[in-house]
Image (cartoon, rainbow, N blue to C red; front, side):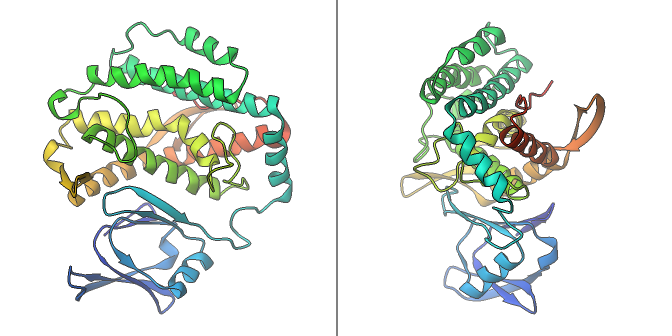
Length: 338
């Protein structure tokens, strides 16, 4: 169990229950015998990640909801399974005006495509920035990529153009990652990931999705209504849009760093019933790296002056910039790291 940045991770089996207006976590072994217990002060938690077999009852869930705590649930294999997010007056849907504006923007093909293109351009520029930093861009020209995005006339065509670039982007990872014996990229596979590099991509991307959902939750935006990702067949989609901008900047960058510094090795993975999983100790190292990155600051230009923001603040600012575009039809360009 780790506590960092108002985010808690449950990485060992146990029971979570409400006790004395706080949370009590009691570890259990494989036979269900209770062991060490620890209090989690409710006022120090914004998000809870459950990455192990954890029992909790409806009273505890209601208590988490009353205190506006988001819960992200993962399987034994590290695969994301769902979120619990509160539906109290202090949570999502705080503004009927914003909700109606999101719906109108979605139903307006021109406005929706404008937002989707802005998100996609930022995503591709940030991804290309990664390749340039590692001298692995292989002649890819940003002007050509942006022009290709601008020419698309539908969401489907836009995602097709994005997919063509991402294929070349992932292939270039083999020129970035040093340990090609254990972490060679062959092709993208998701459900389930077929190899170690795909498992890392899925795990890191899922963490960005949940971080973006958490920051959207703190705004007036409704996470159910996305623009690039179709919301009709999933419960939430706006965080997937926002995550496109930040996956190259945070998730991919951390993968390159941890692999090339040998902070993650082939021995950190194991096959369990034919499926790959990441060892708990490796997950702890990954999460510490995530917290380190999210709490680090970068300098960005805001209104003509330089300001230092943490990455979490940058993500929430981006959500609010998107809200301004949706509600006020203001110009919008997705965040691109200089």
